[in-house]
Image 1 (cartoon, helix red, strand yellow):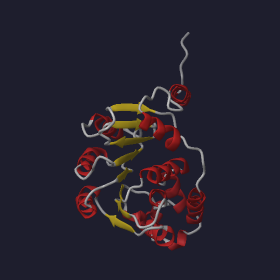
Image 2: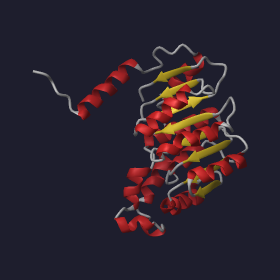
Image 3: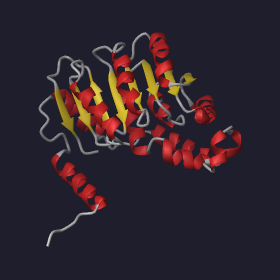
Length: 258
């Protein structure tokens, strides 16, 4: 009699295998990538800004009356939006560690974040240049409040269709040091968005993609990114992907349990 594994059980099994097979830099021969995995991605130290940003997340749950949210008619509260759209603390902390390590000056965020991802991206230092492209107007009032009250650097928030707003944002930045994609619902436009961004990338640019396993479109995007001739290092964290353009490193794709 065969054993039928339900999806939750199968997923736990896959994650356990990944944890055993891909952890602590196992099998990584590049000193740069090994250091990135063990000292940045897997770092356990808690920075003070983590707690600061998570306190803001808690505040938002009680600030319903401050925001003009058209989606109230669908019975979605701010807390509902936070649960469904905002970055998890674990991945927000990783964004902070990545920007703190690579020290980008020009940061581009593509896709909705409710402002919290932006704080994680830009909190490592003041005086940065950051453009945040929001394609869901209903969330704009939340992001504006977060930026106005807690951002360490001015955030240029732009709302509208990503395909239309991205070229202008890239032109205004001149070049991009760090790009964070949160676009699992963009479907067929994802690849075009990435191809536009890479025109403004340089050898030190870092791309981070949220939800690379969220759906077929994100999996196709991640496969294309890994295969792109300009990308030399790609790191698959299952729910997030990191891609680098460091020409000094031999092209290779890595899988890391995170």
